[in-house]
Image (cartoon, rainbow, N blue to C red; front, side, top):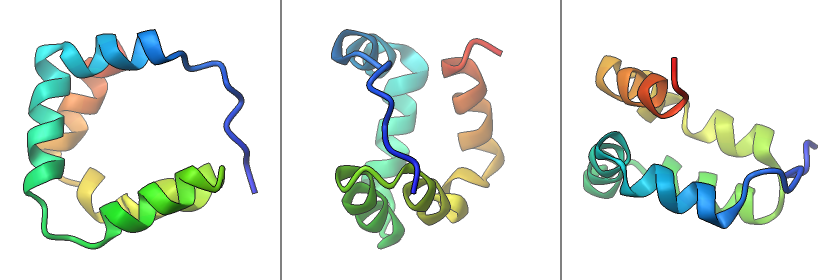
Length: 75
């Protein structure tokens, strides 16, 4: 199980979520009826980032979400 390293600050998270790409991604995630988002949040809260990432696989596989994630990652 991979634990969150703590290198990602709340300030950085807020900067990303306040960006245009972050707002679009948030809207997509909030409108999703897929229970995998809830599962991912539960796994992340436990510190199991590998399982959280796996749970989001279906949502993050869409081309639109992939493009937003690339924007957020600066790629």
